[in-house]
Image (cartoon, rainbow, N blue to C red; front, side, top):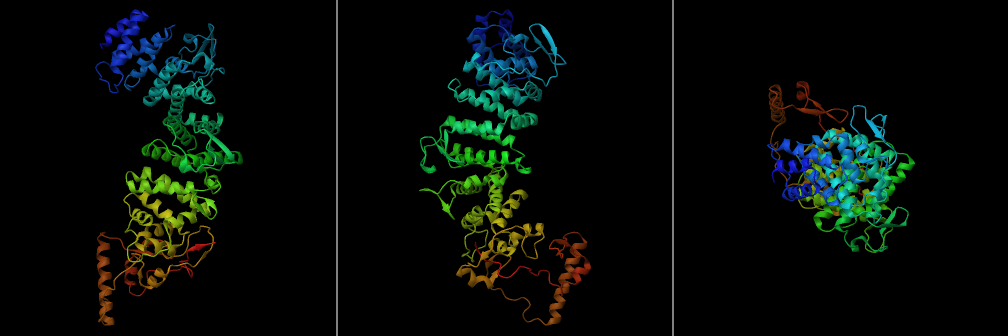
Length: 587
């Protein structure tokens, strides 16, 4: 439809004609998400006219048509100017029911633009700082037209997504306060699913794009408690025991027997998880007090239920669990003990008397992402980091994961990186091209080995382990500074028999190779050794290689010519590992 015709009808101002042309435009453009630059000026002018129309008393159908037009126009990130002013944003916020303003003030007088943020009320001007807002909010009952609310919310979301000025204005108008107020009552029958969902989507965008709003929601508006309650209500949970959740009406039913969550429950829950991720982003980098720790334990219990729940379909379940794992990685590790609190019941996975359902789900989720092999840094590392840190601090978790990932070693014929066991897959990652991926995989296995160098080499081979050991200064052997329980000897018979013949570099028993020095005299051996030293020297002088040597602190340093000349008589590696290093069991 020709925009000039629409503009002419808008300028004429007759509601029935405006309704007809806007409905036609909206129908034609309903699936349009890309716009030509030729009509950009006309679209901006249309946006200005529609916004001015919204300040009038309109028929419900005309009001809805105007807001639908705004939603479509705000998809164009190049034509945002009409929508990012304070008055435009406030108009949309009022129709969305989230404006913080005096209820007695008419729409057109609530906020007039000026450089000092002057607010007019009943014809009187009151100069205020732009960060100050009126304290009374519009009663939600004044606007319960869900279609109008949803269209306004969608338009604001589009503006936030495309324009930084719009983000700043939204923060300045304290829209987060209005949204938070409605979230407190979003489970009231007054509000339908769409209103709740787009309230959450708007909150997510505000907290993702504005650090100040993130902090405001987390602290001033008690966002963790607010959103935790929202998640609890969305999933219809009850609390049979402290920090133990169950779905209402299904108490005592094992997680695997629960019906899947509905599409609406999953959609809202994922938005809540994303918002919580935003406002807890720095939590594990700082100390938390007792009150905060209690909140995070409560949240961990909710996330345990998320992790053991299924959504409507495998793809949606995977996405739901992904958001859950991302959020768990933000929480203080000591607070994750709530994952282990539920009693062991029929159908539960038990280890050392502890319910390991949630930990096992995390492990399965991690292996599934590992098998997929796509964007490992983004998809695998959150779960792998979470398992690593949980293993470091929770003894039962570490022992359970070790039993799954590093069971007693029996296969000494195949290299550690060869095979389809989870250990083999993780060892392969230790030589991955992405440094973060290989470091994280090595760290996980090293923690499961309780920072024991010899045990780490036993399960991965010295060649695969060298990167982490060099970074830690542990190439000479020994143990890192982690605090773990003592071990007892439980080597398998197969490993004990093969141990003297295992090549520590590859980690397997290899066929005996002929000794290249056999039959040589001592003088010939010395001659070959010096020839090798001279070749190394020439290559290093031309910077083709840089020979390295273990220093006394266990770290690598560059070798000098003098060091090369001493190679024949000085050993490069002497293990300082204490006796009985390969024991397996823990007490």
